[in-house]
Amino acid sequence: MTSWELEALFGSLSRLPDVEADNLQAHDATDRLLLETAGGLVGPETEIVVIGDRYGALTLGALVGLGVEHVRVNQDLSTGRRALQRNAATAGLEGRYIEHELGRELLEGASLILLQLPKSLAELEEIADAVARFAPPHAVLLGGGRVKHMSVGMNAVLEKYFSTLQPQLARQKSRVLVAKNPQPVAGPAPFPMVQSLPELGLTVQAHGAVFSGARLDIGTRYLLTFLDRMPPSQKTVDLGCGTGILAAMYARRNPMARVIATDQSAAAVASARGTAAANGLGEQITVLHDDAMSTLDAGSADLILLNPPFHVGTSVHAGAALKMFEAAARVLAPGGELWTVYNSHLQYRAALERLIGPTVEEGRNPKFTVTRSRKGWASSKTTV
Ligand SMILES: C[S@@+](CC[C@H](N)C(=O)[O-])C[C@H]1O[C@@H](n2cnc3c(N)ncnc32)[C@H](O)[C@@H]1O
Image 1 (tube, protein in one colour):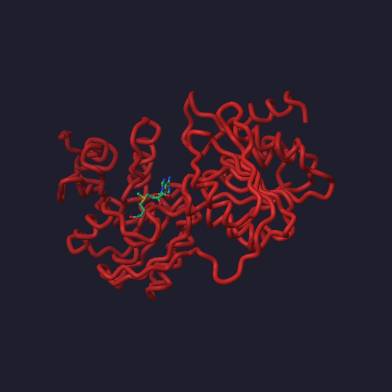
Image 2 (tube, helix red, strand yellow):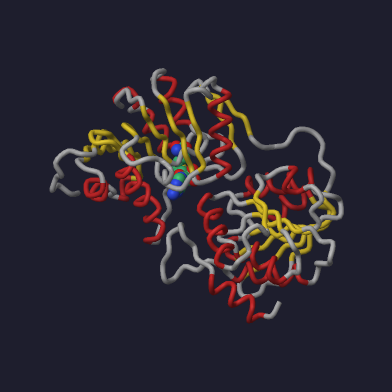
């Protein structure tokens, strides 16, 4: 592949339906470096697996540039899966990749695995374990990342599962770790973790990539103290459900309620399904892999529970929470309520008033605020 072809492909990529902005691209230097490193290792028989592709740069780059007919792909985020579909259609490469969840079907027979290194070590461990467990002994894993996001902890995780680890020289602030000779693994997989939370009387399942692992987040803990003030709704959504603790606790308290737990992360979805089943709530809770409830009908929920993604800093990250509020405004029926917990300094109340409707502060502790926003009341002028 010429660099011109790669640049043309990268130039055609879009992040949609993820947030777009002038300073955000659908590819990065790590994609380039991974493809270049892979170029020296591929032959006609190479079976390529791509894990953690953001928007399709790696998958489509491998199809265009590495001379392979098909690629197997695993992506955690539903937005990433949809972006890959769109970008593959634009590039005329639909049907040339197959999506799998992390597991045997993805990895059996794989000889070269291209990985955008994940943020959390737990997620990396789940991936490394799956590769060692299901890929053949000759499989080589190339894990790439931005140097500023890489840590020696990543090397330690990979060294636990591969007997050879060769960190490559950094280029354009990215680096590739080459992991070879996966070690045979015996015994049960380390994920999902299963943990009982005695303070809630709940068993929680957590895959590596899920928010807060199997622990109870302190914001979620605070929101749960308001359970008895929440209305007994028939149609409730746990938006951004993570391991599904909010869905499970609400369902248990309201046995007549049907609860949809939904998250953009496949790891969260699998975890929430596991949590629901482990607590005998599998009939009451339906779990959906979706971006901001995009597949739910407008006006179809009476109650939405939300602990939105919290990120320090950039406006784009604040956009992740605002996107959830906008989605709640669409999916709530008139009179329906959104209950939200957030770090008090974020001052989301004005946005909640504007996007959903009258918003009251139900409680505040030294760190968090819990609000209730009702859709369909006359709009209030009050802002905070
Ligand atoms: C702060 S965590 C809360 C998790 C869980 N509700 C809890 O209380 O432990 C936020 C969750 O929102 C999910 N999320 C972020 N953006 C999303 C989106 N656009 N659509 C669906 N889920 C999203 C994340 O994957 C994450 O699991």
